[in-house]
Every structure is written in structure tokens, then in C-alpha cells.
Image (cartoon, rainbow, N blue to C red):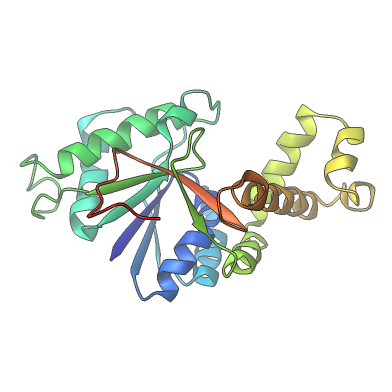
Length: 247
């Protein structure tokens, strides 16, 4: 199986890290590409991917807030999909993106879905590298509001947490944004060691994201009665087609 992880900012590779590491360990081919990324964060994202077993990350170089849902942008994604020819694509949830005030999130969701549709048609073949059209058969949306499947990641959860530790730029940014939204009293409830690490934004961001990841894994696992212990939730586009009913 060949999987393409399409990340908007880079952190998403680690947010899906339990599942991606499972597929790497099963000898599947896993590719990762990042749409938007600051130059200083790229080595960190690449290192995090290596921890998960992903050999290479492709940075597509889209500028924050400086692009449009135009033909040129679609061609870049279509070229990537036709060149990699994935069986499965993992990317952000369009439903969730509609309420997300991160830069470009809503536009990105449209770009991805439009491009997946065009990649399977006879559209701009030469402009998209001359690759033959490729139909993506399965799209899985990460961290969805309404998941319809959960992956058991107990055996790769530690790798996911390890990969998180190297994303210094994004961890610092998260800490700053979260501190601006809430109070020290609240953060002490989330991170008991807050007073000891509050001046080290990277350490604070790491502690917060470790709590987020564990909480989500438990909600999608033991605490959510899904049948998993530590779960990563996804929403598959369309219905599941089964050869027969499964227990």
C-alpha cells in the first residue's frame, strides 16, 4: 500500500504519527508533503518524520495568505498526487477547517478536494509533469469532528510522542498562542509543572501537546468505548465497501 500524508503546516505528520508509523512498520510506502512551512521549521519536520520512519518530506512552498484557489495551485497538488500515485491520502477534515482560524485552512481544504478530483481526470497532463491521471480511492480526514473509524496506536504512541519533541518552532508557537487565550490558573490544571517551565516556551508547548495527544488517544480509545486502548480517529470520505459483514 502507498500512503500520502498531505500536511498543511507540518505538525499534522506527528498528529497522525501513530498511524503513519504503523504503516511504515508494516512495510507500506509512506510519503509526506507539507503545503505551508516556515524555512526554520522544515529541518524539524523532516527529523520528526524520520523518527516515525518516513524517509523524506516534500515542502511545496505555498506562502501564508499569499495564494489563491487557482489553476497554478491546483496543478502543484495534482502533479504530486499523480507522481506519488497513493492508494490512500490522509489530510485535514474540510468540516473542521470551516471553523479554524489558522491561515488558509478553509482554502486548503477546497484546494485538496478539488485537486484530488482533477488528479483522476485527463486534466493539464503536460502542465502537471506528464504523469498519467491517478484516481485516489480512499481519503481519510485527520482529527475529524465526526470520526467513523479509529486506528489502534498503542504500539506506536511512544514514537509519536518522541517525534513531537523535535518540533521546536511549532511547539513555541503553540505555547504563545495558548497562553494568550487562557489564564495561568487554567494552564496549571492542564500542565501541573507550568510554573517551572512557563518561561521555556518550547518546553511548555511540548508539555501541552503531550497532554493533548494522550487525551485524544484516550478519548478515541479506552475513554470513548471504541474498542481501542489508545486510538487515532479519522473520517473516511464516502462509505466503506465490505466483502462481507465483520464482527
